Image 1 (cartoon, rainbow, N blue to C red):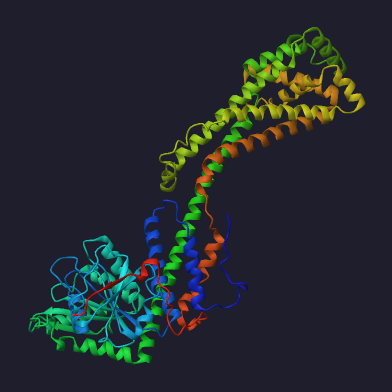
Image 2 (image 1 turned 135 degrees about the vertical axis):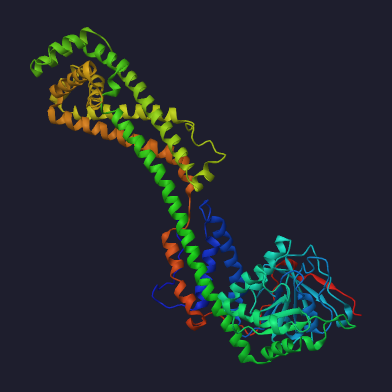
Length: 612
């Protein structure tokens, strides 16, 4: 597997937190979670959320710690988000309605002098920018329900420079895309303005997100709206208790009483005066604004460190899955190898047709009666038998080839069937074999097995020729023939007789003994032992190549992973730097202004509205 170096040129050299984040982001681009482990769905979703978190918030904020704060107004359906935004701006800009969901396209409201921070891809790079040119009298911005992948930028002079407000979709919207976008926007925020109502402040969904806010240590302001007269004194303390229990003891609570809207359709200004003053004080105090940004980014980096550890563990789980499934292939291949080795060494192949052809070739009856004669007599009588009884060695070779071929094909078929069956017992393996015919005999196996047998027979013939190259040995070999000696060596290599019994054992063992006596008379005992061992080794080597190519070639390509354990270790090594946060140092560029380049080609789209 190829490896991508995520470490610095000097592994011991300290790196800044922004470098660590960029390396995490690069790793995420190459993160591989292709196999159906028990947690892969959650792991993939976590990886996607982490990419968004880095792109939408972490890198933009690290690159521009002095950029305006991004305050996202979020909450449940009907909690009054758009109503609150309109009140903060001082005129109707966000459409509020009884129809749900109302906010489909997020609005980003900013002071005109802060426009350059948001027209480029500094934040929310996945969302194209649609610039809305309008006046305060133009009425609410009409959301484009077909433009959920865009954010509408609205310049609002009434907002203080240094802070921008995003009106987000409902966090519990009936539309999946709305809910996902709402969470993406909240994760891109420097602070949350969380809206709820006196009747719904204890709902579960908002508190799930507030728990995430506490985990990120983000600054949160809670707006408790539609509070009946006299109920605030009872509800606010209970809400405070819940905030403390959920790790947000410092979150200010702004109570908005239930009231009639003014003639301009807005909440009375006094109901949002405290919240507006709080936002203005943050915007005008560079030190306070920086403290909020640093606190939030450090909290997010701590959360990011946990996510990185979880993703490293997920990646490790993928590697373990690959190793386990590959181990099944290796085990089945090894079992098939052992099966073939046993069949080619225990005398199994010296049954039936092979034994009959061998007996015809060597003249079994008379040969067995002469087994105890002197070696020279065996050689002489065998030569006479062969000359007088022209049973060619090719008949024995053909019988051996047929028998060995059948053993090989059966071994391959058994191996692929076993791998397919065992893979089905695991979720990841089952997903890989589904819809594929992996348990059948691979095409071309029979032809490859036949080629292997012929090539091994050539190996044995080469051994005989090499050993018989000497003058005296050549003369002895001539009395029997090179092919005959090669057949005898094949028979010896197949006849340890461990799998035979009774009469069959005597016949096969005797047949092998005839061949061994013959070859010893030609080459000597040591040479015969060496050639027989080498013939078996050559067969094993060829069988292993066949099994690994055919069985492994069918299954292992499905297990390809580019990332290896070193890549995962390099990812884990970034966690301590992330946990140190901004204190680890920011060694990347600190631009004074955001880049002007739009996030993508459609970013120059604009909605021109007539000023009224």
